[in-house]
Amino acid sequence: MELQTISQVSNTFGVSTRTLRYYEQIGLITPSKKEGFAYRMYDAAALLRLRQIIVLRKLRIPLRQIAEILRSGDARAAIEAFEQNLAEIDDEITALSTIRSVIRSFIERLDLGGRFALPDDESLLEVVDSLTASKINFKEEKTMEELNKAGEKLGKLTDKQVRIVYLPPSDVAAYQYEGDEPEGVVGKVIEEFVIKSGLAQIKPDLRHYGFNSPNPKPGDPSGAHGYEMWVTVPDGFDVPAPLCKKHFDGGMYCAHMIPIGAFEEWAWLEKWMNESAKYEYRGKGCPSNMFDSLEECLNYVNLIGKSWDDAQLDLLIPIKEKT
Image 1 (cartoon, rainbow, N blue to C red):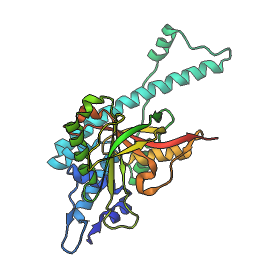
Image 2 (cartoon, rainbow, N blue to C red):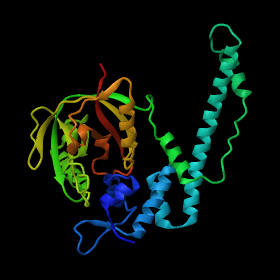
Image 3 (spheres, rainbow, N blue to C red):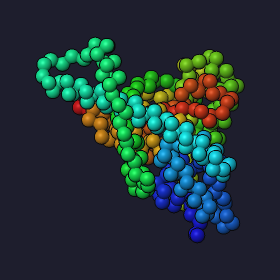
Image 4 (cartoon, rainbow, N blue to C red):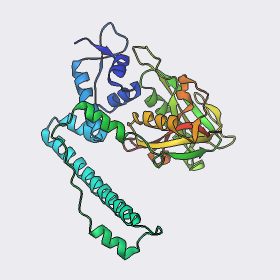
């Protein structure tokens, strides 16, 4: 099979180069640099591994469990992961089935006429106790097309899942790097600055932002890109080279929280924004800096000097109310 570049793999599988680089960082896939090529190439084994990862992600298996399954190669590890996730899904189905049945019971009561009034606690308990769990029949086999449709349905954010936040204006210490593994490079520089300056003690409410700078260029076979990180600093705080001080204007953003690595959910948030009846994009429209969107590492102060395996990020897109 012909080797593929990171850009070709991204287009073929519909996975961002950022996600591919993250999968490599945590050891899920292992591309290689071949003689005569200046960038990563993916062979048949890496592509097969990627297909497995994509299917497992569509089944809502966390990346940590996927890593364990693929690392061990033991069916028992996969069975344990599947059983754990199946139990969680069964709990969700039971809860949703109960809620659906209660709502249907309310509709039946309201259809009898009269004014709307919820039953008191005792009556409500009787309604719930009288319910039987709904039987849900699944086909023994599901095609990839059906799985993709299920993923699209589950991946559509609702208004209740998206927060509208206001980020305050602030000065930030910034560092940008373009090259191999830019997130790791800038993360190390920023963390060293925070530790050496004692910033976390001086400003315990500091915030940590990041964004592609620049984004991977369309058609670039290497998928090369850069990354820029910021940490908020007090007024007048000294920011030494190679960092520089910038001013962040802040403003209104739509926010969606993800576990680190779930970067495919950027598409979910962008889709929500584009379909919103109340909000619209307010950025400058520059593709080289992620269209003014940001990633905020939540609880960064408590992650300084530690692994980011369990980190959570807010995905943030600048918005304004429609007029």
